Image: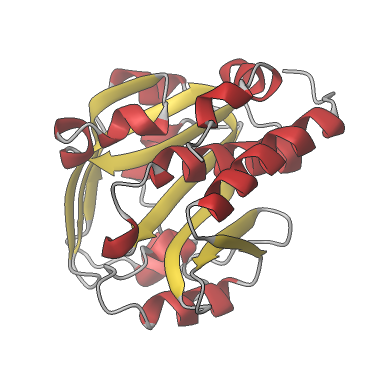
Length: 236
């Protein structure tokens, strides 16, 4: 897809959702140092450990190829975290990237346990190639749930990823519970399939069976270009 876009339109899109987060009591901040990100997430008592694909000791992220976001409450305490990184899958596809464990470790031969496994049976994963923005590691403090924040934060990550990378795809892996509880509908992902990642990482104590969720680059551009401010109108 073309890399030409209107930066003013992206700015308006991001400002809309940043304002919506502020009205719900969150001040958003952006960061790029993943050592700092890991130190923040380790201090959150109810958050699951950060996956190795966002940890620089297992999968370093080059400058310009990753970022993270925190949401701070009125006391400047962390109430939300999420992260994104760019995968160059021009010579492969998402399914192969996951199953080889390269999605999680820069060097699987060095860092992966012999019994680590990932199976991806979602058919569309083999069509996801090129520059792929991967969003993950979302955590929201319990007192901020049921406020519509997943939709806001998903939009923020999409807007930032579009502005930084204009990717061919935006994707993520999500537990089946977000579909059962209706949270996936809030994210606004155009597509989802089961079997995105049937994962076991022994030393990380991770066992998952996640959905694959994704948007194409053109669908991402359309969201930014056609956003409707009325969608986020809040009662006074």
